Amino acid sequence: MNFVKKIRKGFLLAVMAVASAPVCGQDLLADVAPVDSKMRAIDSLELNRLVGAEKLWDLDNPAGELYTSWDNKSVRVTGLELPSEYKIDLRQFCMPTTSRKVTSRYGYRRRFRRQHYGTDIKVYVGDTIRAAFSGKVRIVAYEGKGYGRYIVMRHPNGLETVYGHLSKQLVKEDQIVKVGEPIGLGGNTGKSFGSHLHFETRFMGHFINPEKLFNFEAQDILGDYYVYRAAGTGVLLAEHNIVGGESEMSEQEAAALAKAEESQGFQQKKIQERTANRGKVHRVKKGESLYIIAKKYGTTVDKLCKLNNISKNTTLRLGQIIKCS
Image (cartoon, rainbow, N blue to C red; front, side, top):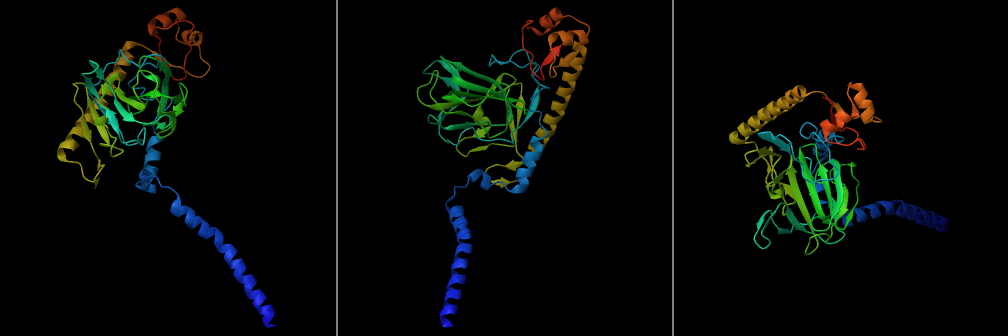
């Protein structure tokens, strides 16, 4: 009888040991699993706020109220009327690389006797490069005497970002990409003297020093908003002090934010009025051709081509703005 009891006791202990094994295993895995320091700092409420805000963005035609055209060839954007002030939202961001080492800053290079329009960050060949903001890929190309393999993205906050000297591009032109998604791999292509990422930030074709927006060493943005001023000076506005935690806006910051928002609303109204005065415009829908659009507005394909500086063989993109009169 005692022998049977011992067997039963041993069997129960064995079952309990097996049942507890997965839990212990999960605990051990949790202890050794790497945890992203950035995600550790974001609680679920904040994450929901970011996701909710991003849903409002028009990723198919990012910043369509500012940019009147979409070009897959030229990095330069010209012919746009720059608003006197514009508030750029930096909150839904991701650092393009986890590297904290800046090897060359924005500004004039005496050695090469030319202006450097971006920030160079040390990366190694094959390092993951990520989209700084959600948006749409405008250019995926190669430039042997310059950027090498590079990518240009346009974002709903008005910015365009450029990623140069890549070893590989992981996205295609006109592809919609969410913030933080991999878009390329670090490299040493083009006019480069060592593997690095050349990173540019532009607003309507005008350069902004990336280090006025990003702190690469701290792996964070410098403020929630950046107010771009056509006069060439910008100002950072923060609802939260990025490094030191939450803080209230100063009276000066609040006044600047109110002024920027008022100016931004005024500029958008001017754009709408200007568009109305200029004539009719059409946003290309799926399946539409120049012939269909010309027929709809009672004009000719030749006139559309002349108004939009395009040819009859131009492939229309979904969401493209076409001047019709």
